Image 1: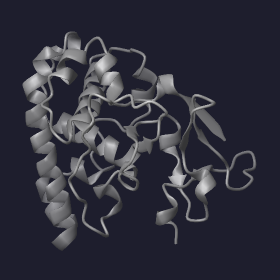
Image 2: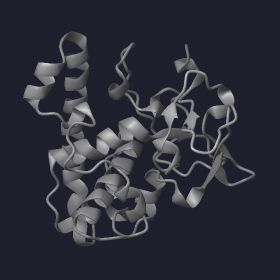
Image 3: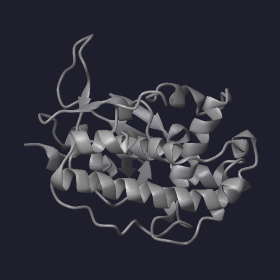
Image 4: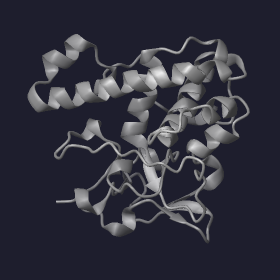
Length: 236
């Protein structure tokens, strides 16, 4: 169906290679979630730069993401009152745990944000900005098995365990399989999951093609919506 080349896949490695973000990414503490925070840093920077009118190489991708003014698309963007009004019990507790993690991530990024070397460094880092970036990672990221570990300097994996039976917004599809490199993959991350899809419809890294590839699990006619699988363990 599609092949997405490595050059347009966003991972923590792009934070380390980015002229604007590299010093900040390298300065992140050596903790189990360092790789995640580097990717969060890069995405937060790209969102901030776009809001300031910058149109860099990631501009077309950022332009297709939910806008900053749309608070309804993900519960992390809801106000405390909306969370309490719409959720309860374990579901509310799970969301609050995610919010608290965003607060910790914001504190960590704030320590290194002044090291960003271009315009976005003049933008005050906010809890809202980090929550937006975190919500995008939670709802859109994959894990890909690259033939070379682009994150070898960020070798810790996030060891925080997820509770069972989480709602859709509480985890990234990257958490379904904890191996590999967490990545944002343009176009592929816009597809919806189908329980009819099999393993062939899971996005995978193809070393020979040098791209993340996705195969069709059935024929799609012109005008049909294309579906993929977020993981066969999610199929009924």
